[in-house]
Length: 281
Image (tube, rainbow, N blue to C red; front, top):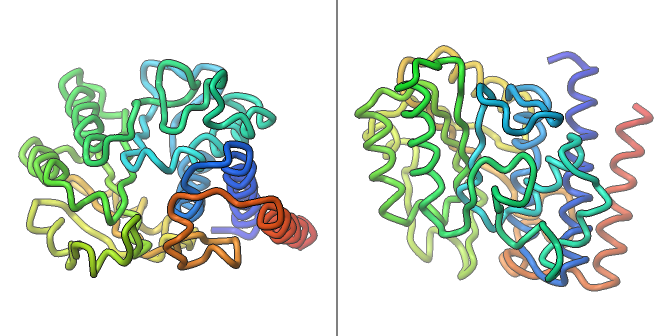
């Protein structure tokens, strides 16, 4: 990865994080922690990886992305807005009664959303269905990406979908698991540990890579692996919940609450400073 690409990705991810804070602050609700941990992946997918067109969000042969951990909608909305799917200025309307940006992704109202999600465990089943559908139609050029949380994979339906993906050799499917170690009730290892996640994925028939999910270089390596795989591909991403906002990092309390006025100012000051540093480099 050259310096120009890295700079572009860092700037995009920082803007996504700014949009997350704008959205959750505007809503006075939402899920900033797990949205911030996923910002780097979304930046890479939407900037470098996926075949998409903001001017034609329903293009038949586009790649698909399913946010199985649907509560991280602020991150997906921000990624889409900064990519040009809809105005960035709409992000603060998150969760408002008259807004099209609902608390969880709605494919019927938001350009660029490929699947409505929110009931944990169900998004990956939709992604598997999309991948199987593309295979059935002979459209191997269509790739399907999905992002789950490490708390979410406690749902049994997730593993049924994994079995299906392996059974039907869906090598056009890439499953990311955001392992930030925290869920709404506390540390995943204390609530319901799914470890060893990589070994479970392998046992269910996936090719697997474990990476630093906040590293663009690692994300690039994982996607190179996906492109060369002959079976479904799983990426276990070790991330930091609340990444990019100092007082939110690794704090379970920021799973599902919005910043107040002072916290908003601190977060935006940190992110604006980060963006200025990137752009001056």
